Length: 142
View 1 (tube, rainbow, N blue to C red):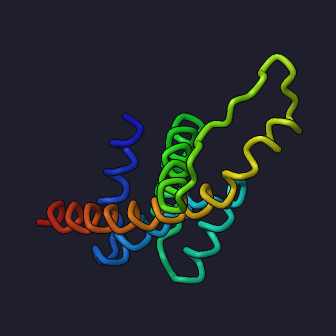
View 2: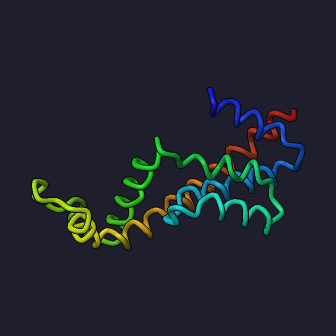
């Protein structure tokens, strides 16, 4: 229900369809980017710099939230491993002696695939979301 409310708010914004779709797609890209922890600030900054609607941009940013971040970033990392030819996605580990430091060391080789894959997934999602929101705004306005 929350998504439908946000979509109605986006469709009701009194700006040209191109500007609304651009604001949302910029938010989507930022939300899926590997810049964890900076999404909100980056969304507000880019909306301000590009003269986009901040609300619409932040709705796009918050597509990545505590419920969606794990599947989105896992998929992005998987895409990165496929693009870069990384053979193993999850290393074999002895979980009985696992520490945070050891966990980070074991997954260090996935950092570049995470960055590359998340960026590519973000670009593709931004393009798709631009088209969908542009179409929805045009259709909604008759």
